[in-house]
Image 1 (cartoon, rainbow, N blue to C red):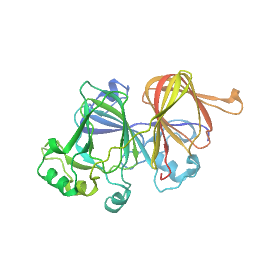
Image 2: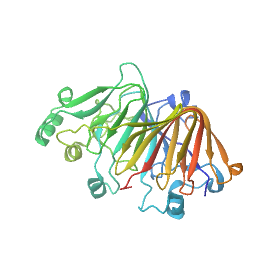
Image 3: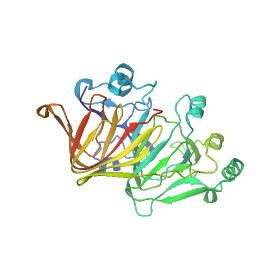
Image 4: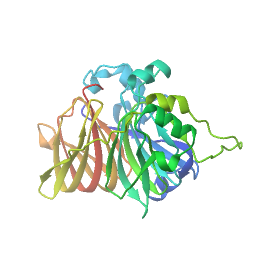
Amino acid sequence: MNQPLFLKPVFQEKIWGGNRLHTVFGFELPSDKIGEDWAISAHPHGVGTVINGEFAGKKLDELWSEHRELFGNAPGDVFPLLIKILDAEDDLSVQVHPDDTYGLKHEGELGKTECWYIIDAEPGASIIYGHHAKTREELAEMIHDEKWEDLLTKVPVKKGDFFYVPSGTIHAIGKGIMILETQQSSDTTYRVYDYDRTDDSGNPRELHLQQSIDVTTVPAKAPVLQIQQQNQDQSAVVTYLKTEFFNVYEWLVKGTLKLKKGAPYTLATVIEGAGSLIIEKENPAQNDSYELKMGDSFILPSDIEKWRIEGDLKIIASEPGEKA
């Protein structure tokens, strides 16, 4: 199988969502409150469907179960990664995610470590990223007393920023931000605070205070990133992260970028520009070419050893880490 697997997006309506997945990426949306495009997903809350080649119409979870050879016969009961594009028309709730041990015990699914590439941000936009409590007791007291200004750490953001958000990190994406999120395949979120918002029925949105206190890392730890860039003429590969869960890269293409397999399979989403993906064969006359545009997401299966990207575009790519 030396064809890429292009996937149909799965859209999720959110109270904080908007319509920029249409105005920026050109997607046809079912409403104007779409907060998330689950671009590459085998999670049961939104499974992606292959739209090209011999597996067209197949769900990604089916391929993981029935054609594990596409993924280098990688171990695991579930496809381990989930790629999203988020459009925050309003502030997201302040939240925290469990690690694998807590998530599997209490929710029956993986924990959730994630990372964010800031696709765009309005002037003055910011995120919540960490907290100021020194002990778990202090954390609990500040949460129950709603001392949000004292507790939460606010960080300004701009287009092109990158953040690693391990499980146990209190966080929130702020109004006016679009991100590409790479995460473990989990939909477990514990809300700490939601600005006293109500749902469509007028009911306060559910909070998960005890779970949040249980799983938050105290004191907060700010990850230190060691971002590296390898240039190829005008193009480059930026390595943002290599973790036990995933490795994350940016492919910056100005002309041509040549790449080769470094993991059992590779995930990729085009966040800017347009171009072509060329799958290289032993006989160059047999190379296959695929058009790429903003919002396209694809998986490069295990049999694809070498490929190149041509055009003027930015792609966020990821691979499974050792634990995945």
